[in-house]
Every structure is written in C-alpha cells, then in structure tokens.
Image (cartoon, one colour):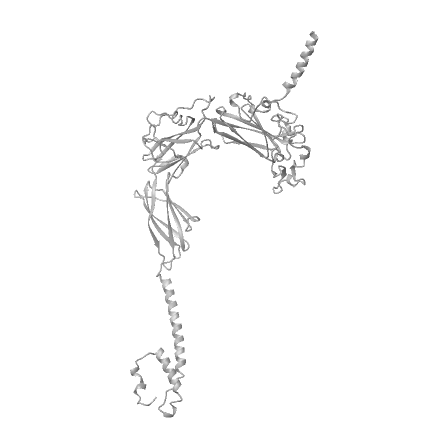
Length: 569
C-alpha cells in the first residue's frame, strides 16, 4: 500500500512539472525590470485576457534583452519599434496606442505586405540581385488556409487568427501588455489599439509591446518597446495666450491697455467631452472679479502694470448612467463661483455658496451626470508698450537733373504708448505678400513719439510699405501704399523733350506745305489782255483760283481782277 501511494505521488509530481515549467504571458513581459502588476478585477479591460494564461514558447520563442539572437533576427540590420499614445487620458475616455516599425536603411514594406529593398536608396545591400528582404507572399502555400489551428495561424495563447479580408498581408504579430492583461493583434508595419479607461486605475501605467514576424514554421521576435501613459480624473487643460503688438507671446509678458486673448484647448482626442456642458471660470488676479462663460475664447485687458496670477477652472458635466463604485479617489471640491461680473449673455452666474461639485448633478430626466474639472494657472507680467502707430504724412523728395539717386519718400509717423527704440521698414509688392527689401534702424524718439523715416525706391511703380516700431516688449505695425513715378512732372528734362518734339513736327509740316504750294504756283502764267487767248488759258485760271482760295484767303474786294473793265476775263 505504501508503495502504491509513493508511485501515485511520483505521477502527480510528474504531471505538475510541465505546468510549472510552462511560460505565462506575465513571464514574457519585461516590465522594465520591475515586478509585474497583479491583475485586479476592477482593472478588467474589455477584450483583453489575464496574463496568467500560458505562452506557446515553441511557436513564439522568448529572448531576453542582450540575447545574441537579436542581432540576426532580421536581414540587413535591426528593426526598431516606436510606441506612442495620446496620454494623458481622462478617466472614462478612450486612449489609443500606436506601434510603428522602423526598418533598416533602404528597406520598405510594399502593398502585398512583403519587405523589399528600396532601389532608389543608395546602399550596398540595395544592389543585391534579390529585390526581397522577406517574400511572405511566396510562402503562403506553406502556411495553409485560415483558420487552421493545427498549423501556425494562432496567437501565443492558442487563439486562432481573425481571418478577415487582407489578413495574409499582415505578417507581424503584436502582443500588447498592461495592468496584468494582454491583447494580441495582427498587423503590418504598424498597429494600433484603443482602450476605454473607465475601469483603469488612476496614475501612471506601463504599456509594453512585443513584436514577432512570420518565419518558417514559427514566429521570430524582431523588436520590443514600452512607454508610460497616465490616466487622470482631471481634464487636461492648455491655454494659448496672445496679444496684438506683443513682441514675444511665449514669455508671458503682455502690454497694458491692450486686450489679451485667451484660447482654451481641452486635451480630448477621443471626443469624450463632445456632449458635455462645459463652463469656464476666469480669475485674472487684478481684482477685476470672477467671470464665468461657456466659450473657450475670452478677452481681458489689464489696466495696471505688475505681476498677476491667472487662474482658470473648467467644469464638464457629462450626461450618462449613474456609475457604480469607482476605485478612483473622490473628485476635488472646487471653490464656489461667486460671480461679480459676466462678459456675455451665455455666461452663467452661480448663487453665493453654490458648489460646482453638485451643480447639475441631478438631471431633469432623473439620470446622473459625471462632473469633471480641469485647472490652469499661469503667472503674467504686464508692462508698458507701444499701443498704436500711424502715418500722418508722406512727402516725395524731388531730384534735380544732375542727381542720379533713387527716388525717396519721407514718412512722418506718430505712435501712442511707450516710446520705440527701433524701426523696421518692409517694402513689398502692391499685395503686401512678396517682400522686396527690409531695412531696420535704431531710433531715438521724444515723449511725443513723432519721427520722420526716409526710404528709397529703386524703380517706378506701386509698393506696399510696412512700418514697424518696436521696443523690448512690443511691436506696432502700420501699412500704406506708395506710388513712385520717378521725376516730378514739369521738370526741365521732361519739358525740354516735349518742346523739341513739338517744334520738330511743326517744321516738317511747314516744309511740306511750302513745297506743295510752290509746285502749284510755278505752273501759273498771267493772262494777257488779248481776246484771242482767252479761251486757251481759261482752265488754268480756274484751277489756280481754287488753290489760292484754300491756302491764301483774302478780301475779294481788293482783287485786281475786279478793277478790269467790264467784258474782259
């Protein structure tokens, strides 16, 4: 009897040895050298599996960092995997992870999913007679049809590949691992997964990815990567601040008496807050009061110099079903909204003592609302600056005939606010889009801020002129159109040329007229008082009289013919 029990114990021990020797998914993940996180039921991710499942090491071999086999796992070099995410993610929203493979130089993936040499790239390996690095299309007949669990169309846990259209072009297997769970996926040179964060633990978490390529009757590890992501219960808020005439918007120094534009950006890549009622509470630190608005854009003008603290609180009420117990800590309580001033009809004043934590929690239809908050704080410095600049007069500088310099224009400029220390002029085409010349000079201006700027123009035409006055904190711009016509009308050279042309034309006309008249006149002969010759020269007399009447009009009463006696022609 004792021998039988001993034999039974040996059999049971032998049966347990393979179970303990088999690798699990949690053993494959490196965890960055730290202990693997323990799977908790409240962290359960939809579609993911616990990492206590066994790993088929025969089909998917496991190599640790530093293993020499990594150097020969890919032809022509090593593959790198880049992991990115749209972290931080607001709890309840979706977070997306993307893995991209970077192949060795002069290698690329083609439409068929194969890896080929890029012959447009200059490299010794690209000159190989074989165009393929990996020709998986030719190997498809060795892999059978999908699904085929008896061959190799399975993930490390034994689950079959999804045989959707185009699955044969996906020659890489990605194993995502986080929070004690894993998710396998087929992909090409990149793969992406999205996770809903409703059940995820707040704070920083680790995502790891192992990548395998299709080999001959097995899969070969080619790369692994990891990245930190964050789950938060506060809305990530960013504010872009800008101001007209501000010289450097990134230094948080702005100009007094000019409005500052505050543009709020909520980091919500999964559009979780699209259906939310969002309100913004502004406190600018200058004792101007509190402002509540439902617009993400707000203007405020500081009227005093000094340093101020900007505080913004964002509230988002998300309608939805009443949530169950959450592992996250309670949402922070925001101070009450005591509104003294509002800036728009859409602003919502809250009664004194009202708490934003409870505001809008009970909806009219009895459903619940999830209240989330975001905060933004920034120190601002307000200084004197140039508020406005204007061109009040333009004067063309006339050049004499002996001067060969370019045409010039004097611009009389005035400004308001602080005095400038430099002036820049940009001369462009009439549309003000194509700069042709830029000139900057230091200037000294009195308290009245009145100065004259002279600028030269090489050619005639229409120009757009931008004048910018600046100092350490501000820049002020004004523009105008200038027409350059060269020398002024009526100048000696232009007038002399016009007179010479006119005189020359008059001389030519006079010479031609004289020649024409002389030709006609030399053919004329006096008619003698001889009755026998009257009929012979009658035609010539009539012709000459017509020409004389046209060119030499005179008083007919003095014509000698009238003094002849009657009856003589």
